[in-house]
Image 1 (cartoon, rainbow, N blue to C red):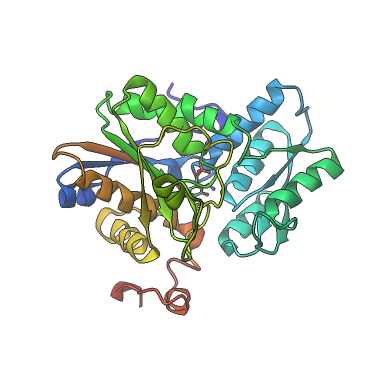
Image 2 (image 1 turned 90 degrees about the vertical axis):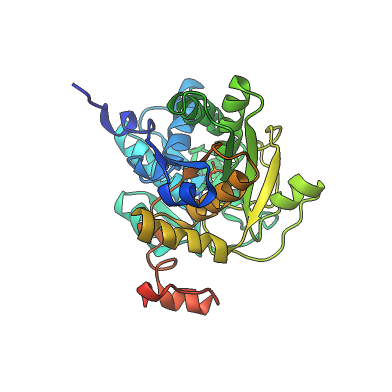
Length: 327
Ligand code: PMP
């Protein structure tokens, strides 16, 4: 029988999808790792599982225990679902600006959801700090996805190895955006270990400080983005020391054009970070010889952002173009 054992067994081993139109347009092969097909619907199922397994192994997470985390939503959904499958409770702290769909999902799966105002990391009211304090006060285990390197180790052990195996080692470049940096750093380490010539490129939305950090050495952010779960104002412990060759910056107009093309021309309904990633992969592809292969991450599904990315009124309010077919 070809069976996966429960929710946990269904995480990972996602397909690598050749994006036909992006490949035809660039004359290179663009492959998307279909992380939206994880059972919790995003790439963050992997980090959630890796963090929980690490906490169990260290003996800090005991049967029936509680996991506390600050999240843009996807890590919370992953933690709550892995928690349900393994018998842990979850308290999830999320900035109130994140999509209604993610909040609804967290409530639906039984997480104790606490919404907080979206304030910068330096503010003690930031969701990350609030989650740490709740963990301290309740005796719960703080997942700490940004600085807990079990996150990138999970991507090293799974996502990165899968990409190498699935491409038979014929991968010339990898690019993705970062929230915690776990995916980028873990995949980078796995691929560079196999072949140091694989080019690793950080994809950054506007409003994030990492493009400037990689290209000038200075953490500096400009502009804003409606994408969720990505962009960062600091070098997290997960990102620290990652072997990165370059960075590209993608604005919302370019990312949304890709998101809409993916729906209409490839049949893939994906979130905004996937738009940033595929747009970046196409740009990286054009710097490589014809026939090269670029891999990126399809992080989560567009249904999670129906009220935003796929809502003409929201897009107009943000001054962003809406495709004709959406009106
Ligand atoms: N895309 C989405 C939709 C996410 O939720 C996240 C995680 N916050 C990322 C991309 C970035 O992944 P990572 O945290 O591994 O950098």
